[in-house]
Every structure is written in C-alpha cells, then in structure tokens.
Length: 233
Image 1 (cartoon, rainbow, N blue to C red):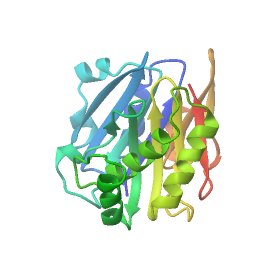
Image 2 (cartoon, rainbow, N blue to C red):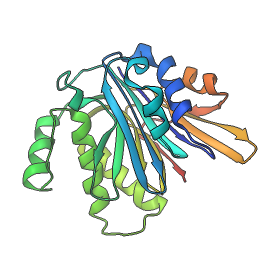
Image 3 (tube, rainbow, N blue to C red):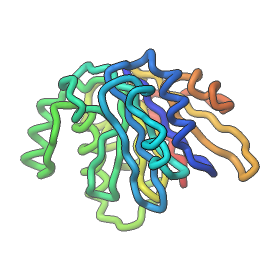
Image 4 (cartoon, helix red, strand yellow):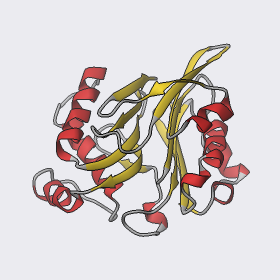
C-alpha cells in the first residue's frame, strides 16, 4: 500500500503536494518524494523517511512548478534502498515521471521483454520502474514529437495489455499534463477531483479522498477499473 497524488494548478504545487503526503502518510512510511514541472524542467526530491524528514524548507523552495506528483512508499517489491523511492524518472520519451501503488505479478517476464525486445535499461528491482518503462516504450512506439490525448490513452492500453496485477498510477509528462489510470480489475484505489481558484479550475488525482479534503478539492468520482484520466497542462 502506497500513497500517490498528482496536481495540475495555476500556482506552485509544492506545498499542496507536501500537505497531501502528510495526510497519506499512513499509506507508506518507508520513503517520500515529490517531483514538479516548471517550464519543462523537472525538480525532484525523494529519500527514505517520513515526509517531514525528507523535505526541508530549503528543498521545498526548489520544487517550483504548477504541476507535480508525489508518492509515499510502503515497500512491497524491490528493497528499502533510497534508490527505490518514488517518483521514478525515465528520460525517453519526453522525460516521464511516475508514482505507483500496487504490485505487478509478471515482473520477471516484463524485465526480460524490456531488455531483449524494447532495449530499455532498469536501475532498480522495483516493479514500478518496470511499469514506467512499459508505458514509456508504448508511447515511444507511436513515434510522435507532439502528443494528444488519444496517443496517451493508446499507450495506457499497451500497459493494460502487458502488465498483470494491481496498479493505480499517476504519470507526469512535462509541459503536457498529468495522467492517472487504474488496472482493469480496480484492485488499488484512485480518485480525482477539482477546486475553483481565482485563476480557474484546478485538478487533483489521489489515492483517497482525505487528500482532496485537506486542500479543499471536491471529489468528482473514482477512476473506474481500466479507465484513464488525463489532465492537460
């Protein structure tokens, strides 16, 4: 069980994501991480420990950007090394970052496919990094420099086809938006909601409604089993 969240806002999301991690801390106390996007540049901070210990005021200031994702880790696969703290990052394509709650049951098969067929390198034993690279490969196979929502949903279909097990996921694509999706059986929870600000509507995807409540977001609904929700920047 892990805590995940993603926010697309009209203001810096660093404090909001930190506040979300504190109320999702019961979902994972092993590690915490936040990544934000500012003008296409990613700012990442993650490490072992509780959110209050991982993020200092100095580090929080560096997490600039109007969209970002966060993760509170409870280790169920891999090990407890800080290298397996999330969000995970992969450079190609587009500089994707991912936060995942769940477990894949065909990880070893996927690792072989990624190495032999997809020619992608893994740095950890985490099934979350496997899932990220599967999504990245499916997106790269489209061969596009500019993505639309149909391209993103097609890549999610590729994940559903290849990945077996439980997964609730948020993925950030720099300068494009944040994606949330759920395995076809809906084993892990994931919801989304919105709030109104002076600048307009802001959106959030999270593991559970307490994360929405603490920031004044109104619950829209659960993301359905097998469904994907994309929030454009």
